[in-house]
Image (cartoon, rainbow, N blue to C red; front, side):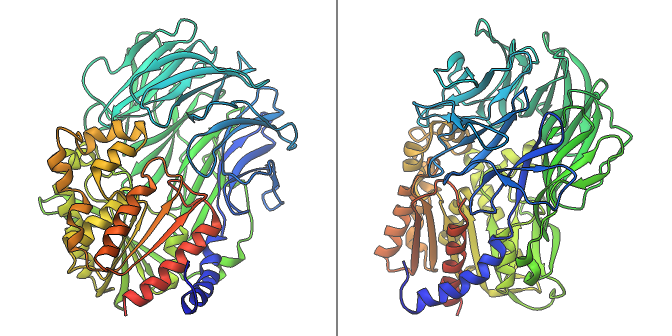
Length: 612
C-alpha cells in the first residue's frame, strides 16, 4: 500500500471517486407472482445485494433481503409467491451456491451445500413447484452437467445429462419434461440439445447441420415451440420459432442486430428481445406465433441494457437500462402501449458534481478497408481542447463496448481525461465475420486494429497525443500489455487489470470452460506453442518502457493472479515504473465499492506522476 504523500493524495482522490462509485446501480428486477413487488440487485451497500420494493412506489425505500458479505445474483420466484432463489459465491470465485429466502427476509437456506461448483442460474417450472434445474461444472473442467434438485430442503442434486464441452441450461419446458442445453465448444460452433429429463437422453435440435452461434433459446408458453436466437451460420441475426420436437422452422424474425436476450410471456402471447444495434441496445416486442414486430413500439433513451422478464400476466416487462449520464436502473414497459415507467426512482446526490458527458460514435477506418466502431466520451463542449486520453479496450475477446453509464467513465472525465473505447475485430455485435476476425493466426489483424485505433485517437483535436494511456481488464488487460510492448511510442502509461501475460501458463491455469473456448480463439498450447509465445506479452516485455499499474483479484478463476505476478516481476526486474494492487476478496472482478474507490484513487495518482 502507498504511504506518506502518496497515501494522502490517494485519500483526496478517493473522495472524488466515491461520488461516482456510490451512485449505485439497480438491475435484474424480477416481478413477484402477484406483480405487486419486484426483487432486484443493487450495489448501494457496497457490493451486489438483494432488495425488494413495491411496484408503483418507486421513490419509497427498498428493503434488503439478506445480510451477507458476499455478492449475489437474483434467480426466479417460487410458485407460491413466498420466496425467491438467488446465487452467491465466496470472494468472487465464481463457484456459485444456490439459496432460497422468503420475501420478508426470513427462512434463508442454502440449497446446495457441499461440493463447490460453477452453478448457473436455476430455472423453475410451475408443473414441478418444489424442483429446480441448473447446469454446473467443476471450475477445473469444461464438462457440464444438468441437475435437478429440491427447493424445499437442502439435499443431493440429481444428475440428468452430462456433456463433455462447456454448456448452458437455456430453458426447461413448462412441464419440466424437456430441457434445452446449449453446448459451446467454441463461439462460432454451438449446438442446441433437447434433453429428455426422465431418461437423460439428448438429441440435437438445432442446427441440423453447419456451424452457428447461439445467443439464447426459450420455450413458448405452451412448450410447443422453441425460440432460438442465432446467426444461422451467417451475418443475418435471427430469432427462429422451431417445433419443440422436430426442430422444424415455423417462423422467423430478421433482427437489426445481435439478439442478446430473449424472454417469453406466460400470458399475452408476446416475446421480447434485446437487440445490440452497433453500440446501443433496442428492445423489440414480437408476436409469439408469427414473430412479427408488435404494433406497440418501445422507445427508450439512447443507451444500452437488457430485458429480465415479464410479469405473470404479461402486462409488464422489466428492463435494466442506462445511458452515458444515468446509472443502470430498472424500469417497466407497458406491453399494451410500449410506454415506460421507472420501477425505482431514487436520489443519487453524489452525481450533482458529475461533468456533463458528450458521447460520440465513430467508425474508425481499419487497415483492410473495414471499420473499428469506437465510442468516445468527452466533457461537453470541449471538442477542440486537448485532453489526456484513456483508450480502453474491452475484455472477451468477444466483448462489446456500448453507450452506457460507468463509474470509470464519469470519474476519468472528472479528472480531465477523454475516455475512448474502440471495438476492434473480435468484438461481438457486428456480425459473425467480425467476431471471428481475430481467431487463431488472425490475432495479428486485431493487433493492427489496436494500433490503428490508438493512432486515430492521437490525431483528434480533443487529444493530447503526448498523454495517451492504454487501459483494460481481462482480455483488455492483455491488449494493454500488447499495446505497451508493441507501440511504446504511442503511450505514456498503461493500466492492466487481471490481464493475461503468458498464454501458455494462462491456458494451463485458467478454468476448464475458458480453456476449451480459447483453443479456437488463440490456439492449442502444444500444437501452436510457438505462435502463442509470439503473441504473449511476456515475450515482448523487454520493449515495455512506459509506467504500468496492475490490478489482480486473488481468487480469480479465469485469469489467475499468477499472470499479474508474472508481468509485475518482469517490469520490476527491468526497473520499469509500476504499482501493483491485489484485492484479497475479489476474483475476476471489482465488485466491491471499497475496492473500486481504492483502484480509481491509486491509478489516478499513479497517472498524475506518469503523465508529468
